[in-house]
Length: 414
Image (tube, rainbow, N blue to C red; front, side):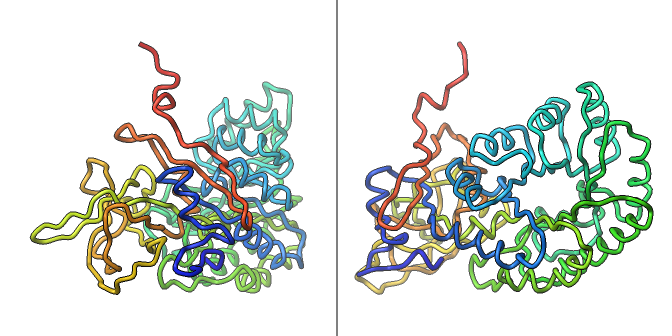
């Protein structure tokens, strides 16, 4: 969060006071630092420069068109998991040849759209999916580029909801079935096998799980080459974590130094799919205190952002650092829950948090909100989603307008 700093008691994003943004666009709103986004992407590009590489930004983390275009202009591809994300990637200027299509439930319509868009490759997660892609490609008189996502059954040490590399999850083809599945692809007339893929989870804060997974994938890669497969790439997936509180995750360089000795000797293109580690700490959520409420057992800061704006705390019990945008004069501390306006007891952003005393009207900054906040936002309880803003030094612009009440009913009919 180097690009979010206090200056004379006021919190800035780069050279822009956050209070100025909140005053003009309203709250809740999301703010992104252009410098943070660029620096994070460039750190990956530099770290993996010893090999041929394609760094595909995971749109699931932050899917704003301006963010995608900013990264695409620096050479980023896109990791997508839906027709909507493919549409966004193309609109933002990502060429099809730099798009990887992951996800367990690709439909016929989505597959056809991806083939029409000439994407780089489908990461395939099951034999039934191979069957469907082959049929759709045949109907279109095309050959579909595919790789198989292999589940290496490796413990990633992250939250159970974001673990994807264990055999009991829905993701990928079990490691012990992988060789047979690759051999089965020879029976398909409309598929071209291009590579191998894996992804073991999200918010992983050590390199050990990655190395363990990639060692298994590298062995399989060599077996496949010995078996006659001409593999163009190895997709290492994403999942590198960020610091929300006191975590000390590897840097992009440390990640590369750990995994390239395993994957580099394969002699193929290396694909990686970072998301959170590019956008997470580039963004914050601004929210204003509506009420300060005290009961016999609890103190509450009721704010205008809720679980519909930032669901990670409710969904994962996740921690997000929260600070006043204007540092309080008083040093008085209070222990409180920061809660939203949603009619759910699970609607909270922080619990039992000790922080400087808050008052109605105070503007708060929720850090590390650049990933899985705006993309997971909803209109639950009839609440319009807030604006998204991109800061570039002392300049800033709205890159997604706040929704209006009319937006809430757009597409509905009486």
